Image (tube, rainbow, N blue to C red; front, side, top):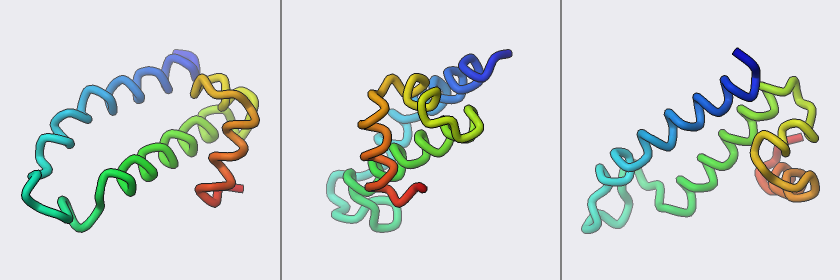
Length: 85
């Protein structure tokens, strides 16, 4: 299996499990699942996806950007925002 195929398969698995993850959070709970709100969860998901793409491409940022379907500059900006060097 190619790197693109492995990454796509892992991303698909993550996205298929996301609804269950979301439904487990109760609307009445202001700090669901240990105090992480939507913004923190989305940031963690984005950071994890970036790191996974970088690892899958042996830290080749151009190929990682292609895997994530991002512009190279957008990936650089997101890496900086998440403290990924």
